[in-house]
Image (cartoon, rainbow, N blue to C red; front, side, top):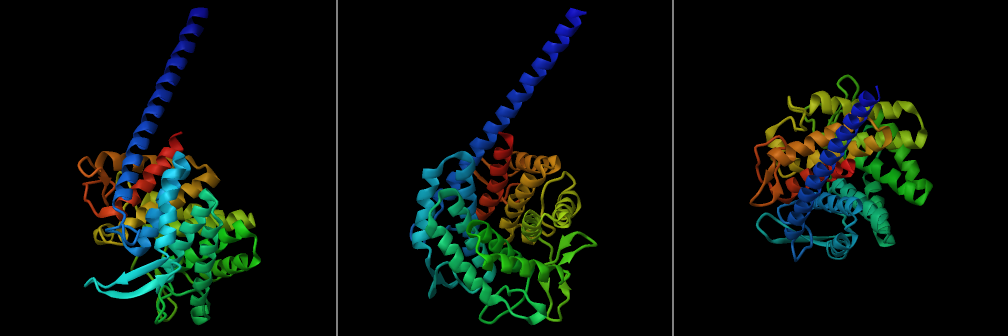
Length: 370
C-alpha cells in the first residue's frame, strides 16, 4: 500500500515539475520575442519628429502605450522612460505634412483635428504617469481632455464628434475614448468634473443604439438622422467599449455594466472577430491590412486583459495565450524580427503599427505566464 501511495506521489510530483518547466519555457519565449518586438519599435522611431516611421499620428500614441506597458511588465523602466520623455518633449509641437511632403501646420499639446486621435494620446500620457510618476504627463492628459470636451454638443442628444473643422460624425471610438479618459482622470485626481463627463457620456452612449444588444457588437457611429451605422465592425471598437463598461462597473458596483463588458468580450472571442481556430481577426482583409486597421487587434487585447484583471475569467487568459502562440508561430519574421498584421498568418509586414499591435498581445501573454 505504501508503495502505491509513493508511486502516486512521485507521479504527481513529476507532472508538476514538467508543467512548471513548460510554463517557464513558454514565458521565456514570450519574453524573448517581446524584447525583439520592442527593439523593432525603438529602431524605427523618427529622429526628427520623435514619433514612428510607417505609423500614423494616432498609431504612434498606441505604439508609445505598448512600450510603456512593456516597461511595466518587464521592469525595463529606464530604457523606455528615455523614449517617453523624448516623445513628450518633441512631439508636443508636431509638424504636419501633406502627402507631397510639404508643411501644412503645427499641432501643439497633442491636439489636432480629430478627437479620437486626442483620446489615444491622452490615455498614453495617463498610462505614462501611472508607470513613471511624472506629473507633467498627467497635466498633458488634462489639457488634451479639455479640448475633447469642445467636441460635445446637443445634436443627436449629446456625444462628441470624431472630427472638427468642420464637426463631423459622432462615432463609437471617439466617445468611448472620451469616457475612458474621463474615468481614468477621475481615478487619478478625484476631480468631480471628470466623473461628471464620464457618467454623462456613458448615459448618452447607451441611449444611442451604438451598443447593439441583439448581436453584442459595437456599431461604428451614428448617421445624420441618429440611426446607428451598421456597416462597420472593428475589434478596437469592441475593446475600448469593454474597458468603458468595466470601469463603469468598478465605479458603480452595478453588475449590469460588467455583464455588458462580458457579453461584448464573449461575442468577440467566440463568434464575431475570430477565425475557425480562435485567432483574433478583423472582418475585412482591407481593414486588417490598412494603415489604421493594423493597430486594432492589439487595442482589443489590451482591454480584454483589463477585463480579465477584474473577472479572472480563465477563457480570456487562454484567448490571449492562444493568440500570442499563433503570432509567434505564424506571424513572426526572422529577418526583420518583427510581427505582421495577420495573427494567424501568413506573415505580412506592415511596419511599426502592425508590429506594436501584435506586441501588445505578446506583452499580455508574458504578463499572464508569470
